[in-house]
Length: 200
Image (tube, rainbow, N blue to C red; front, top):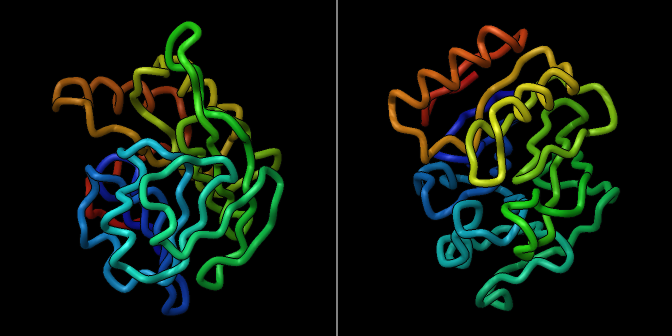
């Protein structure tokens, strides 16, 4: 499976000529969706979903049951529940989790699903929900208003994936990114930074 990281949490998976894109938000590059056969959306925040871009794409879009998106009727949407297994663009997908990580105090959260693709690649969206089984590749959130670096490191360590790539990193400047990468590299076996557009 070919994995290409785009800005923030957007990741493109390619296998046998099919393309599955996860969390193409307003900060990610439009080219991430070129030739996409299906899209997975972890939750309703715009840094993870660009509804206007998806409306013109015309491919199946999988979103969590209960997600509130503007103009949802214009999208070919399939609602997904935690624990549900389904096929998207020929990939076998398991939805895990259920809620967005707490941002602050009693501020409301929203539904959030992580996606385990082909029992190998795990994208948790905006959560640190464990996948519940071993995975080869973890896409670990690196920075967020809801996240401390030590929590991300502990999460990556607990998952124990062979390879670990950062996502959710668009708000880091070069100095902050260097620090985060340094900590992950020192503490998480298999960690490697992928710049936007870089493939593993």
